[in-house]
Length: 195
Image (cartoon, rainbow, N blue to C red; front, side, top):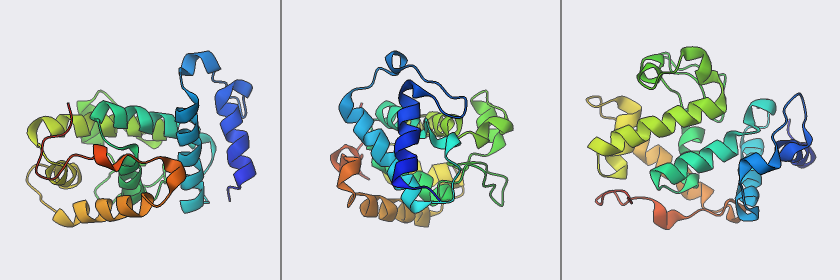
């Protein structure tokens, strides 16, 4: 089980002190204090919601989540909600159809982005591939409902309940002030995403 102290120690390691063989130089991260606060809050949220998760794979997850949200022009809390719905933040989970990892990516989808199945167990790589896939879908689908529905069920297999699940989790996450959600950045179901 994660404790706040353990999350804090892991976060210090992320800043360059190093733990379990991981050393990330501060200079290479180019993060500001506000970004670090959000990353820490994401790690705390994951620890609270999934206390049994192994800590090491998640050391860089929060940073990757913020990067991909920025690339999508989405609120990072929406991606956080999606990863919670997909896997309950479990990087080792495998779905019934063979989906792998935090964002439940199919190996065939990963191959489109030059990734191999073993990479999907890494929360950072899984998050990067999910971001690439969502950006690819956003080229064809211009509203958040269609983007999330296609992400979950493919271009033909429509499952609108997935959108409702993700948005429900997103609304719950908005209550966590320390996550600094930017709900105005979420594309409207009837408007194209921000450029």
